Image (cartoon, rainbow, N blue to C red; front, side):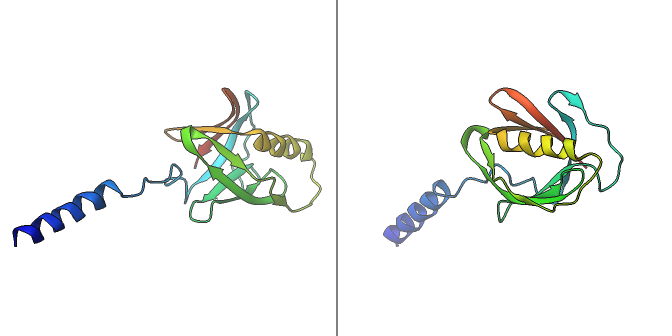
Length: 137
């Protein structure tokens, strides 16, 4: 009986110490993150679905959103020490008056290699340079 107790205790302790670490993006789902700043300049918001935003599907490591004109989607890969990479992704091809904004937004998103989440804000960075600030809505 004593040996059975030791075996069960050892199994329980090793099971606790081998539990997987929670993914760094575990709280990103179910929120729209609207672009409020790009390249250290505030972004004018309309409060509609035409504002540039990202939404994250953490189970599939995919993002969807809007660039301000076109719908977009792709993959992302969070890593150690707040690193992240976005795939080039795909988007619809509508022509809009503000296509220059969207082109810049997508170019900045492709440069991102780090992130920081503070409260409702997500900072997407290239090294220490903040490229995009997204606010959880």
